[in-house]
Length: 394
Ligand code: 3PG
Ligand code: MG
Image 1 (tube, rainbow, N blue to C red):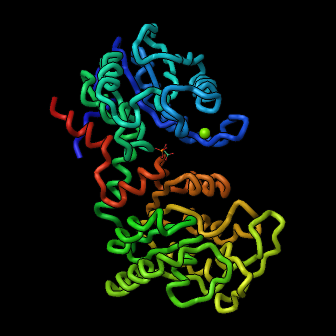
Image 2 (tube, rainbow, N blue to C red; image 1 turned 30 degrees about the vertical axis):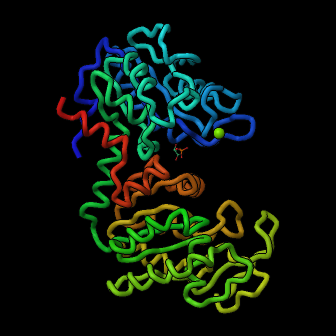
Image 3 (cartoon, rainbow, N blue to C red; image 1 turned 60 degrees about the vertical axis):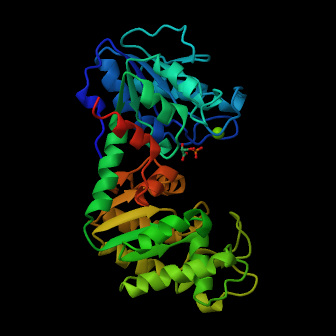
């Protein structure tokens, strides 16, 4: 995959437009809960500022209605955090598509939520051309949004004088390519989360490549159901049992495995106060909900992880937000932290688990992508990256 890289360009005195992914989780009052994506965007911004570029940064936040900026849509809290991290004020420009604002060399401004502009989601050409006219160099550093073909991630790359990948985009592409192209074996994938349906394609793709496919959460429940177990009131998708069965058969035919839990932690409700019981998977009763894997199963997962050459991690194995259901994910996190394997991890819940168990420094590469991370691993061509590739030669 060949794209121009920001680090190879002379940006001095140039107007640089950076599309970042600053779509961070916020609480109801708008406070930033977790700022990994903002921090990950700093190297490109600093690179441009240090070399005297006039820097414009934009991002989407949430999924707003185009044509209005509601209180919850504004990038104002992001501008404050970005300013704190850069150690200089960051002005927020509200209406920016038609220009009419000034940015000095060595200054950075934040352009209000790009998804509030009419035409952004549909990759409107007129909008893309207007935005391209604001800059000399377009930098796409929004790996987390690379699976979307929108005006700031795709269209603008066609019309800007120069279009390149930022530092984060470059690092993501390199790390994910390393883990997928020629991975050290055994290759172990961990796919957790609520639903098989949202991750069916990735499960199928991985089933064809990995040596062990560890499933967790609601996904594991559907697999348990597929292997003939009773799962009581557990979250699962009975309509996908056939698909789960097919994935297990596919793995078996290759001499690979989907290790399923032999013991589980159950409760009758998902809450901080729920009373948890550890039981054998055979003993799950009609009222039980499976909310974590039990100690025997965690030990088995830890052993698999210890012997892995490469680990791809997306999603927790239990409801780790509550202490009584956190054991499996905690054990897994600790095994990953101690493993010699190259581990790439991605997705919002996974990032939260990494932060909770303080293992960020022990992960080979933490991707800022959720959907983009999965689609890259599926081997799909991400439209934002394709748009940069198309501009490689000129
Ligand atoms: C994400 O949070 O995964 C990215 O920022 C993309 O957001 P989207 O799913 O709203 O396009
Ligand atoms: Mg929001």
